[in-house]
Length: 303
Image 1 (tube, rainbow, N blue to C red):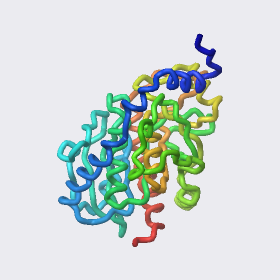
Image 2: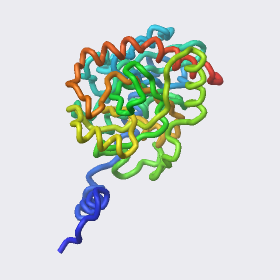
Image 3: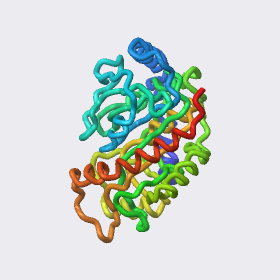
């Protein structure tokens, strides 16, 4: 007779215990070779070493206009890269200089709700690391659950909660990519958060620090779910970012994360979401986000 499960984590762990072949069927062993092949192709198009990798979320592509582009490569031409199907995600890798800093910027990210496994969703982060990047900048559009926030505000991600039901590190670990048990005490570097908030203060940009919760999507949440997510400590909710950050930490990269609050998700005053309005809010907030990202990167020492 099977013992009763006590709590969600206990049930999950017990389900793994009764399927001993699961770890044998999930492996990270093939990822290293894919990363090396993708990085080799990019190096054939762009010979510089990036200091930072940037993932541009929904409606946040205008930062590319500030990059001195040296190479722009469609995802479909990069070995093992998936194709982005999300609305407003262009689907190319832009390489060049932002100020004096060499960067790689993803114009469009991949999502679990598109049907991609997380090893594919996070492959570009590993490629950035293989190219030499030691800093990851992530951005996203999100729903605000903290009643003190307003649409168009920016939140510096101080911590996150992973409720996607999956983790990109599950499987046999490849030590060439990172340790078996990466520490997540400070996934987002406090010094970079402080730097961004100081820039926001000087530029009169409304910015907060808070907790991002990631869910799988693609449906938006119910009122009961918003209440639950707020109860467990989340300020905003989205369908991305966390897998990439987990892999960045696994790869020993520093991380700074920005969320644009594109709609308010207050359960007692909830209205149906309008995707076009969400994108419009993100577009309106682009100049503010660009200032913050450029300011944070300007504080980096070019090696």
